[in-house]
Length: 88
Image (cartoon, rainbow, N blue to C red; front, side, top):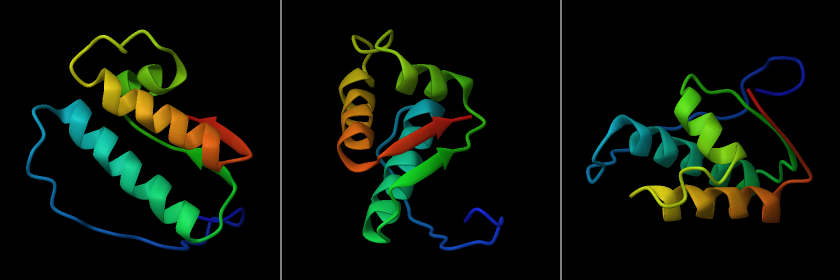
């Protein structure tokens, strides 16, 4: 959504190789972030209902967990591609 609450893009995909809900949420986040970059969006607000993913994106506490490398990559992608990020 844009700053007026209007939808700017939506998507759907099939992710088959995930071992838990956290990884499914992380993949969805990855696809959304990549779409935002393709649209030239540089200021984002990530709205999510996964407190675990929010915590993983805002700290390195889960870096040694099985999903740690993937989520760490998301953090780097966010830092490299967005001027402003708010995670709710």
